[in-house]
Image (cartoon, rainbow, N blue to C red; front, side, top):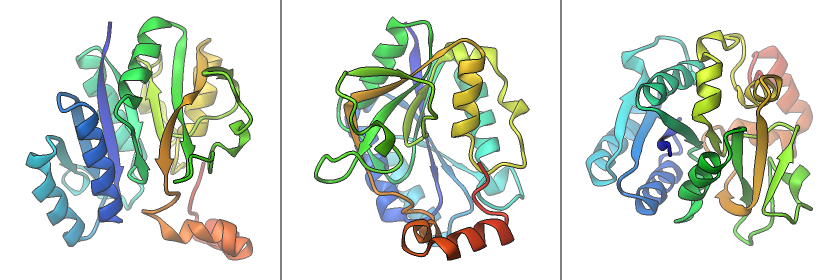
Length: 236
C-alpha cells in the first residue's frame, strides 16, 4: 500500500486557490501536501503564507529555485517526483481552480493501490450543477465508475502512480512546453500502463481561474489563438 503526496501549483487567483487548499486539508488533515507558488503577486504570497500553518501544507516559493517566468510546471513535476519517489508515494496534482470532495483523494489512492497497472487516474470535472465540464466534456456520457481510456487526462485532479513515477524521469520532460498532461498521458500508455477516468469521482472545476486570458478560447477564439502563437503561450 502506497501513501500519497498531494501538490497544488498556484498562480494568483488567490481566493480560488485558498478554497482549493482548504478543501484538500479538510478531506484529510494528515496528507503530505505541497503548494508551489509560481511567481504570484506579493498579495497572493502573503495570503498563502498566512494560510500555510492553518491548512497544514508546505509552501514552496518558486522564485527561490528558478528564474524562468510562469508557468514552471517542469520544475514542479520534477521536484514533486523526487519527493514522492523518496517516500514511496503516489503523486496527486490538484489544480488551484478545483475543489475536491472528502473522499476524492483517498478513492484515487485506493484505486492505484488495487491496480498495479494504473499510470494516471483522474477525477472527472463538473460545474456547480454537477454537470461534466471542461476539460472532460469528451467523457460526459460515461456511466461506469472507472473507464480505461487512451485519451489524454488533464491534471485538474489526477493521480500519477508510484509505478509510473518509477519508470519515467520527469527530467526528460520537454522544456519547450508549458503543460505536460497530454505528454504524460501518452507516455503512460507507451510504457504499458492503463489510464483511468473515474466517472464516479466528481470535482468542482472553475476553468482557468488563475489564467483568465485563456477564457478567450471560448469568448474570442481568434484573439486566443493570436496570443497563443504570437506570444508562445499555452504550449502543450
